Length: 348
Image 1 (cartoon, rainbow, N blue to C red):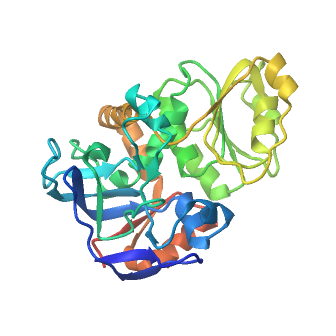
Image 2: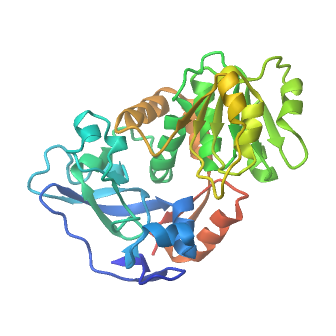
């Protein structure tokens, strides 16, 4: 099979022939149709300090995908050959305290598809049946199915706190921040503001329903509050960027008792006014991945019940290229000016 392969501890990938993976007794083998390019994949490609500390090459990367089941192991009970599926990328142990308590997303022995085990930048991928999400809704296209993983990040972050009637600030208008706008609107938020420095992404944010898209290279969040007619600050914050200035500015603009969900991974240390966190009684919650599998049920239910949300999330995919054009796709994703980039593995 063709696969994007990292042969050793160095920058780059190669599109080469690799042996097809075989399904074990509890596994499912999937013919990959589409894959999304994630920030994690950019780290792995460039072989930066983060990648060097967590990746063991050789490796096939990729964890956002959609495809068709072509084989199942003898112990697989529910997933069938021919099912159209996406996959939860966190493979858990099932026996640690959190797993046994039903908190699998907090497993201390998590192994990630495309990070610590071979992933989906290939014509075939194998994952445990417990990680397979079957799409029963025919309106889920291969492009939309490819971004269920990051859509889950947005849903997990946005639904961490009640949103009905609340004023929401999102920092970072990357694909996940953009999807969070649509989710927050679906969940009943009153005013939604989002920040970034990319004009194309801020334009996308407006199309997805943001009341205010703030270019923080020229405008401060406090000025935006006045433009929205707000008197007390934001009720819920979603930090999606990891930029060192984003969280401190968010904290400065939260109402007393405000709640912040943090998904963006910081690229450097962030200085926070902890006195303000304490005296303003703010709640900060770290978010990683998706709740397994409540987030997945929520994603499918929202998409099937809300055509506007369905159209908005689908519109976050701005570029679809053949997998043979993967280098161009990675360049587009790294430029940070558009939405989600999807590679098509049916056009090799």
